[in-house]
Length: 105
Image (cartoon, rainbow, N blue to C red):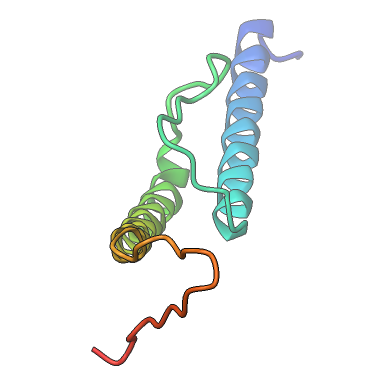
């Protein structure tokens, strides 16, 4: 006896949804490894079903890694801002004038 077509569609849709989520998580994991890969405001594509329970732990680990990366980037940005503020305190060089910058303190 052939399976009910609605059951077949449901199983196929679940498999497709699982595959789509797995592919999206893979894409996000790869982008996290990229130097410029972290982007704010990610929204799941409209075609995705709610995340399957079997992928929830993987998604939570990815989220934790993203939060760690974001914290690291914020720390680096603060360091860059501090350096820029320090550079802005150096007066512009005048033509033929000696300029020394004390970097020991």
